[in-house]
Structures are given as structure tokens and as C-alpha cells.
Image (tube, rainbow over all chains, first blue to last red; front, side, top):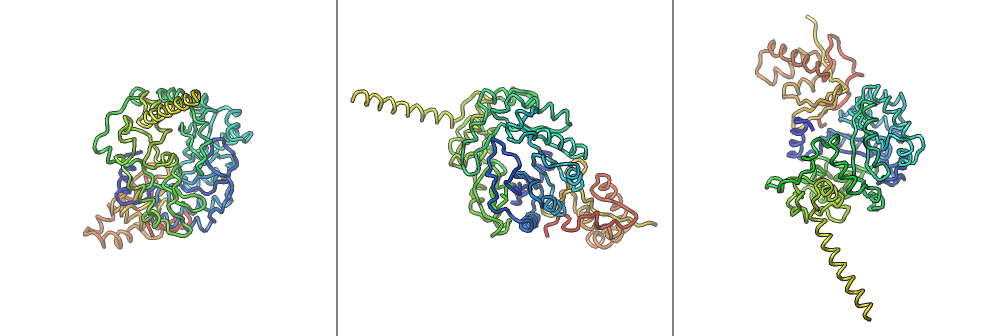
Length: 369
Length: 108
């Protein structure tokens, strides 16, 4: 983040302005990615007019950075009408897409509408791996062709790669592909539970061994020794700091108008079909509860070695049952990075040890009986 | 002397944050913030009102400045913002179709 954007973010935080919003236009999708956290049926998406009204309200509330995502945004027939309207309101618009439906005309129109960047999901440089994740034959070829078209329009493109068991050997290949295409590339090792709480997708997450390897890769993290160093104990200011931007300068709106602190934080705080966006943002009890949490308020984590530089996601913690609790996936990341178990991992180990003692005792009792 | 017309570049993103205008360049995503005078100029840059009129009606009315000096400063500023592709400049009125029709980044 640039210094100036940081200054603006600090100012937005002080003023209580939602500087950044992700708006999912649909959960429908033309791919069926094995790790996806969404249900792809349409349960009553906002209409074009409802979305335009919401965009008006968001502009009034001070939203500047608008990410349009899904689902696949291009399956909405009114997508360009929505995008054009958003740009007339002068939002800084970022798109997230698989790009499969982008041809020359769409690429040119995206460029003409002054979109800031387009993020495209690519899971492997090998069709047999990428297509096995999207479950759509030919999808890698089409996504890469679209990247070339968008790039030729002078647009900023970011390849987003999610690291999972299916593609863990291929992240270097994806980075090489990005370099060949002349675009940026990000790698995210987080597979999230489904929005309904179903955690079956988590089995696709890579284990500590692969994470450790990734975190030691200096081409990804820079100075690996510094990146993997055990952090210093937190100071007073770190304990007073915010867990993340969710609910502070950022939030998420679903295709059905539900407002959440973040796309990864499925705590409904209100619906824009029945309340003004800014009223939800400012007055929702749930949003204000999220907003009230400081690092010092976290259970377990405040006593953890990693607290001062943990990637702990409050949304993932919420999905584990407690928005003030630890996020086990981030504990795993901290452990993979430093080799030091988190306070949560140690507590679980103690609990497991106790369970084993009980089991042994009952087995003994059965054997004796 | 020819008159100068200024219009907001429709390729930028903009929003007012507590009276301070944030502008994201459409060329390279560089973020700018405009001071009070530049914000006034940005808000008035409709492509139809000549710069001298903007200076007279919006800047001289608000600040205690010499009109000729204010116009010179405004021209310098407008050319600088045009250099960053934040504003468009022309000696003719700039067609409304190429300017944002509403808002200009202000809460309405």
C-alpha cells in the first residue's frame, strides 16, 4: 500500500468511512472450482436497479475502492450496465473474474470504462491441473487467451493462485506464466470453509510441510529468514491495534444485498433491500461489535508468541465459532513459518492429551469388567 | 487571448474524503490528493465553463487573491493535473459525453 493510500485509509478509519467494498454481483458461475466456498444457485439476486441504487448509497457513504466479484461477474447480462454506472460514480473499480467469457469486445470495453485492475484466477500453468480444479475442460486456455487480450488493452492484470493439494507443485509454473504474460501474480495458501459453514473444502488445504517450503521461498517472501523469524513480544500499541480492516474501513455485500464485515466473515449485519447501506455500516450492532474488538481482547491469541505478526483472520475465527478466538488455519501458517506452535495449538494438544487419558481409563475399565 | 476549458478525465477514479479529493490516475493507478484550491478546480471542471470564469466565480470569491495571479496559478495547476491525466484541457469546450455526468466524486 502506498504511503498516501495508507494516509487516506487512516483518515477513513478515523472518520468511520467504508473506503473499500467488495460487491458480489452473483454467486452463479460458469466454473465449478473444487475449493469454492459458494453455493452457485440464484436465491434472488439484486436487480440492476437495486444494484444501481446501492452504488448511489455507497458513493454517498464515501466508498472509493469497489471490487466487483462473484461467482462469475460476466454471467450477469447487465454486467456492463452496472460497471458503467459504477464508473460514472467515479469508483475505483477492480474486477475479479475467471475471464472465460472475455473476448476482444469485452476487453476493449473494460479498458474504455477505466477499470483499475482485473484479477483472474489461474491455478496451474498445466491445463490438466487447472481444468481439473475448475471442472471445465479448456478453461485455462480461455482464461489465458483473455489475459492476453486484456493485457493488449493496457490493463493491469493480476493472476490469483490459490495453493491447494491439487496444484501445490505448480505455483512456480504459474509465476513463470505470469512473467511470460507480463502480469502480476499472487499466491494465497488459504482455502476457506463454505459460506454455510460446511468445512469439507478445508481438506484441499496444503499441510505444514508445503507451507514451510513456500514460506522459505525467497522469490515469494523476500528475505526468508526475516519472514520466518519468531516475532518480538507485542508492545502496548500492538495490543491496542485492530485485528484487520473488516468492519473498520471495509465490508462486503452479497448478491442478495446482505452486508457482512468481509467476504470471509459471514456475520450478517443488515440488508440493503430494507435499510440504507450507510445505516447498516454505522449503526448495526453486529458491525459495531466487530468494530469494538482490539488485539488485547482476543481469547488465547493475546498470550501467543505470534500475536504481533499473525495473519489471523477474524472471519475464519468466527467460522470456527468465536470472532475473538484463534483461526486454526492461521495458527498453522504461523507454525509453518517459524516452527513455533501457537498458543491455540498448544492448548489443543493439552486437551487431546487429557482425552487420551480418559480413553485409556475407560478402556482399562472395560477390560477389567 | 484564447480561453482554456477544463474537464475531469473520465478515466480517473475520485472521491471526496472529508473535503479532501482523492484521485486515482487512470494511467498508472497513482493516487493523488488535491488541496482545497485544486479540489475547487476539479469540482468545477465541467468542460463547458472557461477556466477564467471558474477562477472568478469559485476561487476569487473564496480566497483573497489577485484575479490575474489566481488565473495564472490556476492555469499552472490545470496543466500539471492534465500532465497526470487527471484533467483534460482544451481551447474549445469539451464534449459532455467524455466527462463524468454526475457526482465528480462528491457525496451527493
